[in-house]
Amino acid sequence: MRIVTVLNQKGGVGKSNVVMNLAAVAAEHSRVLVADADHAQQTATSWAEAADAAGKPLPYDFDAVDDPAVLSQLREFNEYDLILVDTPGSLAESELPRLNALLDTSDFVILPIEPKFNSVRPLVTTLTTLVQPRELPYRVLLSRVHRDEPGQKRRDEMAGTLDEMELPRFQSVIREYTAHADAPIDGDVVTNYPASRGATNALDDFKSLALELNTLWANGGSK
Image (cartoon, rainbow, N blue to C red; front, side, top):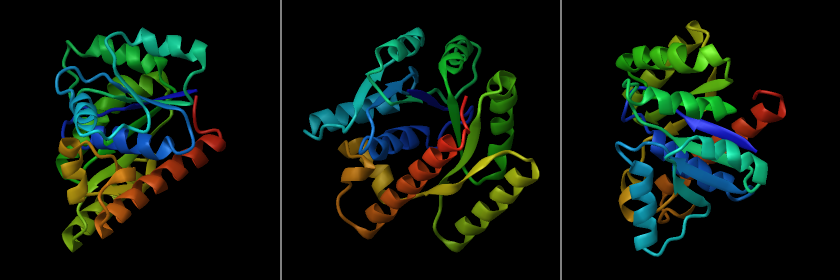
């Protein structure tokens, strides 16, 4: 079993989108649990509640996490192959004990980042404060990438910046689609988005991410 924490100090970078939709793709072949540890926003919890209200069962188990020790205990039962953890978009002092406890149980960290200049400092703070001191394997994920020409240029510039900083990143990116914005309200996940070209492309993004992640793990890229 692997516990993967999706983390970044900066809010609005698409952490819940990554958690809920990567889980949906992974659930096609694995036993998956999504754990919402973001007690302030509870975006993933609201999303799961919307799915339940709309009669659209999630293809994986879902729970809110009060005590991170519960995740460690789940290892003993071998009930899941993968646990994806959503986290607060803040490194406030009140959140640090919970985040520290979550990372102490984690095997891998995904750090979504928007391709914007002001995203770099929060990313570095998150890495130096929480991830690198534990020597946890991680990858930065370009998220909320706009599909127009300026958006593609910013994507390439950010990828270059990350490479210059020697920060490991996914080759896969998560592009911005209307379907992603509607999903938390409608209770959809990427594997059951209403049919459209955008929905197909959104699914391809997450399939690419899941494949890259599994390849990384197969080559020993986890604790």
